[in-house]
Image (cartoon, rainbow, N blue to C red; front, side, top):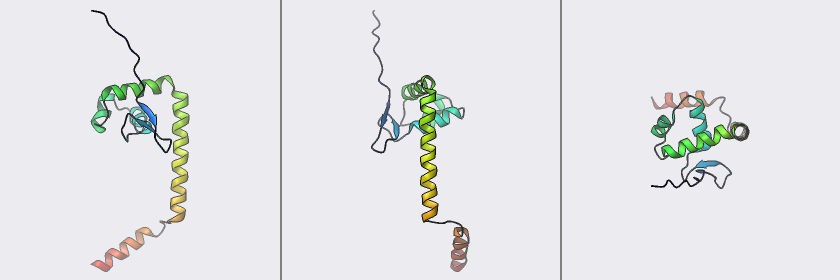
Length: 110
């Protein structure tokens, strides 16, 4: 019996918004790497995200470990973008008095 070795394709791709997704799922590279860095084992990751396969998770982790600088730069950029989106949202929809409004509304119902 002869073993045939073929290269596996990386299960990562950019979506229309330039977000890196795993396989054909909505799970992002950010998500997998964040939980991995938080100490989750690949088996635990697929328990939390059952749409992923164990092979996909191992491939993503291997890619991260082999390209840590580039992936960390991407994750940092994503965090900055998320911060900007949050800042724009809170500017457009101030929440400073939201708690008081909700409590007042609840009191009216009682």
